[in-house]
Length: 308
Image (cartoon, rainbow, N blue to C red; front, side, top):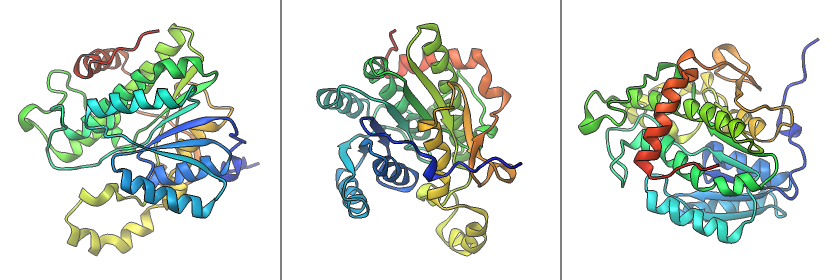
């Protein structure tokens, strides 16, 4: 007998919960904010552009006038912005039930964040590492809190190099290699964070998810615009809408049966699309030595330490 598919209707009542979604103004983040808001949560949309965040909030309120949504400015490429965001968040909120580290960039040309980190690892991993570490105090004092990191199938191609994590001066850089490394880093961080929670008996869990191949603006840099336009009919056949792609991260965030250290993705062929189920990540993502080294290096680079 086939099990029942987990859908948007499977989300439990979230009344009284505070949820923080990074990159909440578009794509998967927008869909996540919509779903959380429709089920009673107070949702904070953390967006690099306040104007875009407010426009997204306006659209969401039109869809659901009873939704409780707040927009806050957060630039994950800037450690000062992250610090300011956290201070403001703590002033306004006494709990954090779900931290959904959803924002990300994909396959962009070589460039640096405001703090001199390679852009993809700086945004996708280090920015979220710093954010999570500085919000740890609230996560620890909120019963049954969760941290959900959004990875990708591209983690399978990721290779860690602790001696040149950030592709210094563009050495050995390619957009795909850096993206794969950043997504592998998301998983190494998730599993190490779960071990941290368990070791220190913190009432929180760390979970990961990936959206398969979903229709979002992440693909803007995947190929030249003329080629993307040419391939779009085939592309649309292969991918799923963001409303489906978001389900693994939503399930990871709210399903009562989810356990720390799990990884969710689509149930279809090659995990490209489908309904959210428990999936497996690569052996490299479970390398505890790499996870420990990445954690130490991330603390050193960001200046953010996780203290129990």
